[in-house]
Image (tube, rainbow, N blue to C red; front, side, top):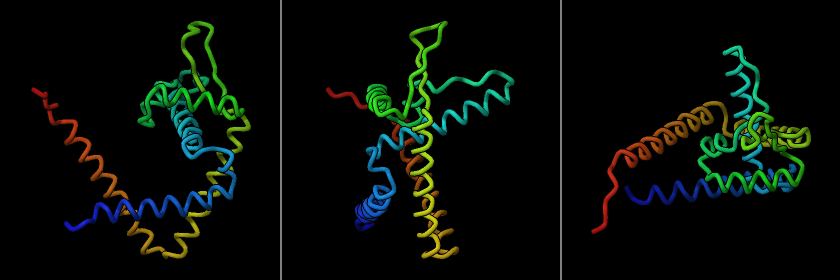
Length: 170
């Protein structure tokens, strides 16, 4: 299979460069990309938790545990904590402790964080909508299907790697 892996990697790099240039113009320059994606992760996971609590008839949580963010984003706990600390300093995220257990810390977006996440997300969607218009509906749907297949292939590779026993060095 020739060098398709290298070509895919290069294409994704070009997409990242092109899209990030546009997003920086829209306000993401206030954040590093991983900080913005942390805002998105907190927002979406919190929305999921609210829906879960509503379906169970329990009270909504005040935020998301850092351990959950780590699990959802596949970022280490220290990495999540460091990014959260930066976002707290910038006023985009707040830490919330409970009276019953002061060790338990939740995080959630501040109004300033919610506003920035909405602004940048809308700009992202607009960028992808414009690209979809250029590609046309048929090519856009083909691309979506192929990207979903690629994601499933990555998941399959990961599962196979997790199934293999670790080799011990002599």
